[in-house]
Image (cartoon, rainbow, N blue to C red; front, side, top):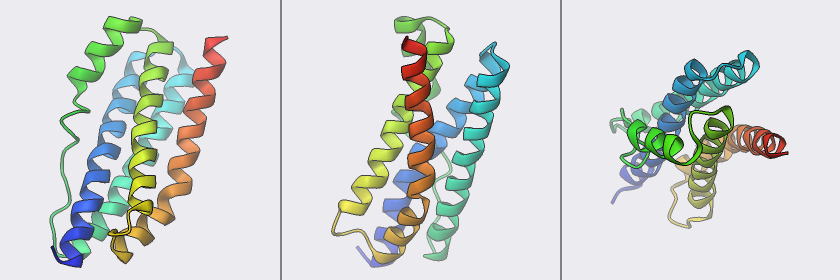
Length: 149
């Protein structure tokens, strides 16, 4: 696999996970009754959109096609089925699921950085975006812990 196609493959995996998060935050912002929580979800959906756009342009620069969909794992139905089954349609349910999607994205970013096969272009882009990913992860983790008490 060429460096370009490895870069595209690596970043497309992350794009799919970020797109899952974006879709789920957008959906959750519409469903929760709490205005402040809805605004937070909308803001984080915007951050995910930035990540997708940024990574997509790096993929396009390699001559490859950026991923246009989320992952199979992250499909809405699975998320919502799980939320409703375990937690009901509650604010805490959404926060808990969204925090899990943050864990997935953060793990994908960290795995990419620790993989010695990650090409320089992919590594540079992921390093640049990591603080943003870490920040939204921490916001949702803190929110989840605050809601538990």
